[in-house]
Length: 72
Image (cartoon, rainbow, N blue to C red; front, side, top):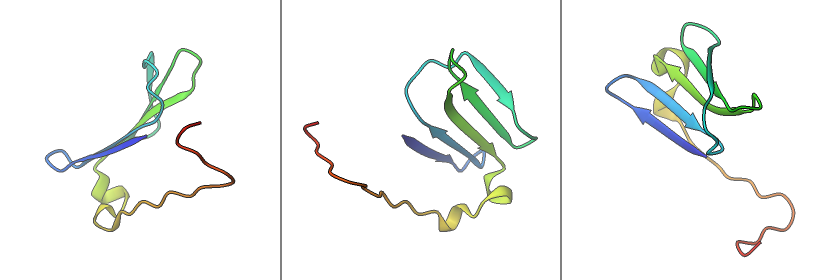
């Protein structure tokens, strides 16, 4: 997963699996979702991010459940 913030356009782009996007849908005036051929979520675009979320306070924490191995 990749999360990018573009300050010049105040846009957050969240990219999930790297499947090709075949369709984009507007959820509301600020949010667009991208779907693959099986209608699985591939990406989310959040425009006017500072109005919709507290970008300045954004943090990320990765949680591991059960055994995890890099070699798996």
